[in-house]
Amino acid sequence: MNIAIPESVKTWSQFAHPILMWILFAMAIYALYLGIMAKKTRLAEKEARKELIKGNYATRHHQIGAIFMALVVLGTVGGMAVTYINNGKLFVGPHLIAGLTMMSMVAISASLVPFMQKGNEIARATHVGLNMTILLIFGWQAVTGMQILNRIISRL
Image 1 (cartoon, rainbow, N blue to C red):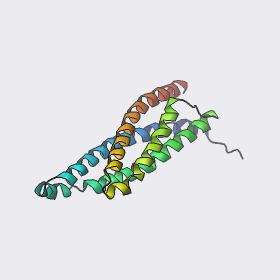
Image 2 (cartoon, rainbow, N blue to C red):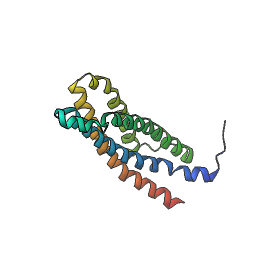
Image 3 (cartoon, helix red, strand yellow):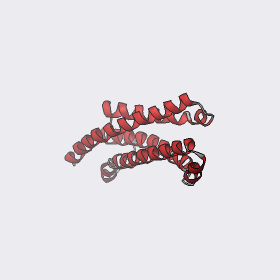
Image 4 (cartoon, one colour):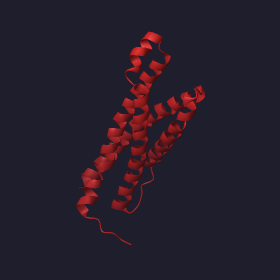
């Protein structure tokens, strides 16, 4: 079955992935802030904790993390789909491999939450380490993604 996709849709769909990924990069930085504030709340003295609890940082961190995980998966698969639709193949290179690795790390990081909620400090340290690594990869992905986007724009 061969579905004809209008050229305008094929052209403009190439911009959805980069836009979403920049939004997700900002969300990741915000999730980092919320995670730091949640830790600060958890470790604070009684009086300071009362004030910090009002920020509801842990709940907001979990909510942003859940949205982030869902959108990373959709954005990764969507970017691969658009590439395939427009080129008839995937370009297996560092950007794709790093993106798939990052998506896997997000899932592993989220899977550690139940253990962290039970006080497992190894799970917590692993969660933090994975997420900091994700941010580093994400920063690199932003650079390589813009290089890819520039190549796409130059062909238009």
